[in-house]
Image (cartoon, rainbow, N blue to C red; front, side, top):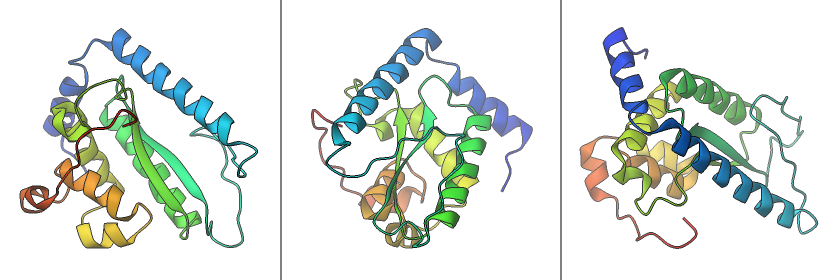
Length: 177
């Protein structure tokens, strides 16, 4: 389902509401922290870091046992065009790696004391991304590549409607969220 021009403008206006320089700094810090964690993991398990536009490797087993960390957005760019690009990447990943676990994340929010679902611009972006990615059913999503935790995250952001959102129990934030 595509968004009309008015919905697109409203989404992009919300995305521009934050100070872009501060938001970019937060994204860079989260990316650095994630990079350090990945480097620490190398040697313990096989870890292969790739950026968004890199070609995806071929795994004969459909990615069984693999984890893909997919950045679906960044605090400094919550635009519809970014959501479209990451929704396209989502579809590519789940098609090529049907047996992999996919961890979806937004960069730039690690130091924010609020949870993503409590930040309206971020929660709205997640809803737009999910719509563009074709994610519409809670139970199917919970059984899919992001599992129950990912489905609960999407539900807390309102992806599956208010009824399911009210049923989600979100644990309190921890120091490593």
